[in-house]
Length: 163
Image (tube, rainbow, N blue to C red; front, side, top):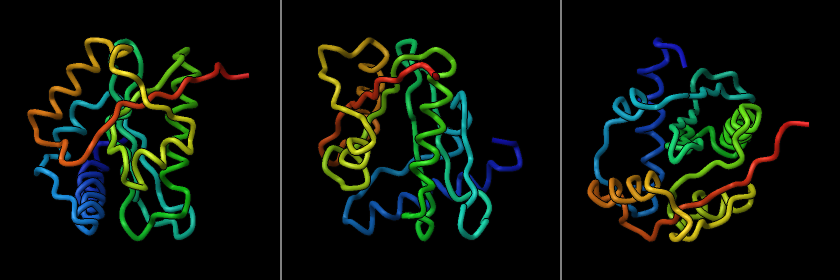
């Protein structure tokens, strides 16, 4: 992420939230600028088909010593082109190259473009007894923010070191 990407990334995040609204899911208002400001790493994607600039983002933070996917967002109209999968793959590759053995995230359990989408990409539900204090804090923060408007889960993907 470059500083000049910030306004476009805020736009991507806000636009991606409309997919939830279109599915009848009412999320509490949030400030994507705040999320971008506290993210440790933000990968940015242009559309691979049209070349449109800044159509996706993947923001990570460290939780319990491991990378945690804070947000993965693709601008509606650019979905289904592999942007999200490419961003997720890049996050996993970078984490593995840095010596990390897992990547965590929180997501809606049942929405097709959330829990099931991550499950198809190697993520599994992480039982609560395996959460560290950082994941507990993420969960509690989501609760206070009113994010859990539908069932949510913590998921994990085990990472292999690069060959």
